[in-house]
Image (cartoon, rainbow, N blue to C red):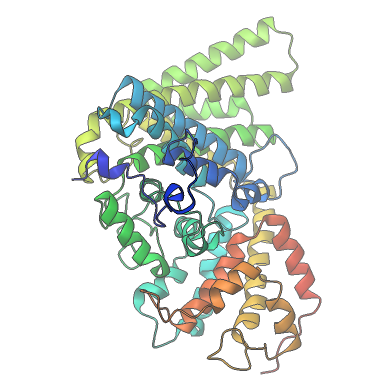
Length: 478
């Protein structure tokens, strides 16, 4: 069992130089804790800004009030920080003053809430499915004797959570090969699924997907060693962030569907009331929301559209508040299992708000995600990613000297397309890794450059690059 001293390990993978000893400078006056600095490093990073043009639920949305992946991440970060304040100040889950829990718990939860979706490709979950489907439909790409089963599964079951860890530890350039060089505590808490792609277990919440690629397995082992965690054992705060993520998308996806005019506030209330089956929490939230709605309609003089909007906003505030309270209580009730890593379900499932959250997710799935306008644009995104992967795979793989990754491309189109790949990603791909503790087969590195590039795109850039490359592409004769 890990202790909080390990779990909040504020050391970084790249040791901090002793400036005072080497240069004679005075000690830094930065009053932030190391974990507070993690949040700031993430906030100012390029991938966070790209989230503004990445789909949350509704792809290519032109309504500014509907969430993007960025606004969703801000909301998750805010909810997680708020729960961190409650756990640190009200519940006092950490009593060691040296760990500065009143500052570090809210900070680490805010950081992982902000970062949790950074690795997701464009067009939401359709992007992940498009990548997975491309590898499934091109099995020859992974027919290489040097690829073990875990390496193959990294791509067949491509996962945005694993890409997030890779992005923050390798692909961002602040501290060279250390990426953003975040603390061990933040990296550990960030791993929602602390297991490899060949060890997935759908019956355990921490293993139902994979949280790292084989390219980062040595980094993960180092993080586990420094925080006292291990394969399949989550950091306790990961449960909290996951709950905040579930709360945010369950409630606000319904709100966004109302904002888009796909459903009405009354549709949602009727659904919750009909399917609630007497659940106390869901019943009270619905009753309070309907009572407010009737009062606004009788007294406010609002138009039907305004009435719909304000009632939905008030419901969102109330529902989130109730679920946050119940998650806090669930954490208290399950803290022993959380601390020893034996809790096999998520916090919302074992909370009083379990039914309310379940109903909201079902409503979103049945009445928002399957709307024709959503499906049409999702299909555009899906086909765009598949097409880009066709173009870029040739650009990566077609070299005059296959053993030399930086060698000249063998066709004019391959040369052009290869140079449209991020220079930083190409540099990492082309670097020799003879001294690396985790040397990778050429084919693995080729596939990973492809997924690095696709995952880093925004929705708009993906569409633009696809149109650009399509006009120059000529299929090779078989």
